[in-house]
Image (cartoon, rainbow, N blue to C red):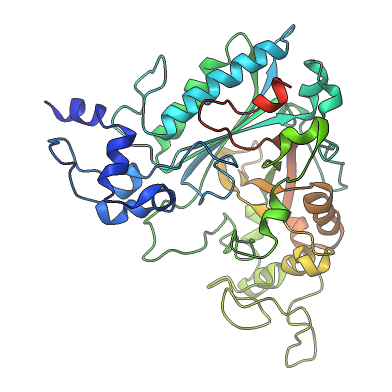
Length: 413
């Protein structure tokens, strides 16, 4: 058997068994790291690596891709329904998409595979599905639109492109191998043919796993450590802040789900990079070298908004980003940020078309992102170096059990 054929035959069961009892949770957290360089018993194929072999379970109470550690490559994609498409056709699409995603995230080929990812393992692939506000009326389910699925209000600093905002359906793809991510995108796009057409697509990236000597918080394209203050699943109140629970009646289909706010934020890098280092740090409120707050300590030291420097001035300036975004500045508003950087070349003026594909997860967007963004829009010094160019909000239902498809509780009431 040649190497290509040997690798093609690796099943999810063999991947899990090869982990030596690590289990699903261990795989999702990168538990195959110790397996790198080993071969499967009785297999003459190439060795698996921790990056390629790591599988994130598709089925569960919540969809994957929300609390999953950030992957190196990602796509955000919105679709609009084709004219005349009804609820039954959408249900059929979600069945196809669920089946394809469940197969690919387990390292298995989907139906009608194009072999783009033939030689790779699952590579931490996640596929997450959401519904836009416009979908419900179009398929006759207006009465099942969640009250929390509000339009993102306009903010004074916005410069939004409607063609790259909103959408009936939304897909988030993440993987630690770019070809695995591109393969998933192609499979889902092809599966939508005749039912939905792509409205917009955005591609992004993060630091690859293993690129640093130890696990570290990532950096954005401004060079800042980004994500230090994110809530963690182990934090008290995390589930309440991020996931929907306890709903009854026509909105019970959102139990276990969340709301994703998506923003394309261009960074004015040419302007930002002209600022002296100390000025950049004061705009953010953290040291650039290690992410520690200007109030003192290390990266993980809680921000002290009352701290003052030797001159008696606030250690963290009044318009610093961390001050404006802090939960204590926003009535305790909490959201889980899980974003990708992007770089799409140069604009006509020669400036980088680059920045952040911002994705924020919360149980209630009005009490989460919208409240915080209102504060940032008027009080955040970082706003001068950003342009918000696209915006959307999606209801992301809970996960599907084996034998179900995502959104089934909505589409088959």
